[in-house]
Image (cartoon, rainbow, N blue to C red; front, side, top):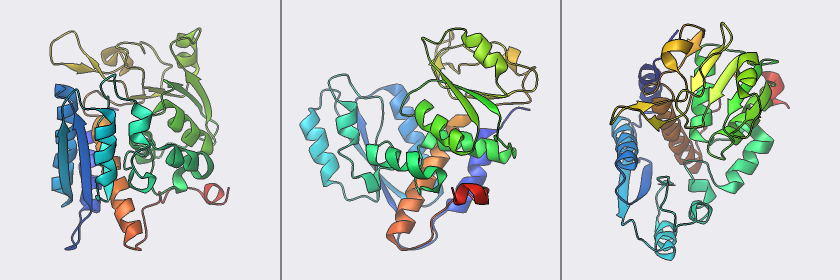
Length: 287
């Protein structure tokens, strides 16, 4: 079964549409003129427009000084703030992220927010967008991960680490792999669920029959302008019970989760109930 990320994302976005006169406002900082970064930002701006959210884009030159960028971020009065990654090498990514007030950190990358996830898991009103997208896909198919063997390939603080923590909170048995992992193919073949976020084309070539495969990786394909994932899709689609394509799989869902984070920030500010996953078990809620 091939997952359609655009279809589910559009469905969820309609539930987030703002109808009140007072609307949340997103501020986006874009450094440089990378075509890939511009494309991602444009998709986020389009999603804001679709659900009636105000968005403001601030463009900075590739050579912007770190102090100048941080000063601008600290002056922003938007409900949610994000800095499009990656950043030029002369900028310290963590310093830039931590200059965003944690309560406005719509990407949920600030250390304060990651620490809260370590304790509260999905009870937090904000979750890192790509891990949240993966969990949403599993929920869409009513996949119960309790006791399941999950192999996560990639250990970044953007995806791999927070995702592995969130899956463990759901009582999955998680193995985190990386570029130095020995016998990676064996870890993949043993898994009930494979989630790859390595940015390495055709890294996942075979899975056990009936496994669930979620491809988070993004790389340039051999053909110019073509985006590919980590999974050898044409081979693995015949082995997996569920598989996400690249593009059109996790990507649209990630932007959708970004919009949910922003709406939750705004609702909390307005004293309104925020979205918490209704499929969480009583055991999870009381853990």
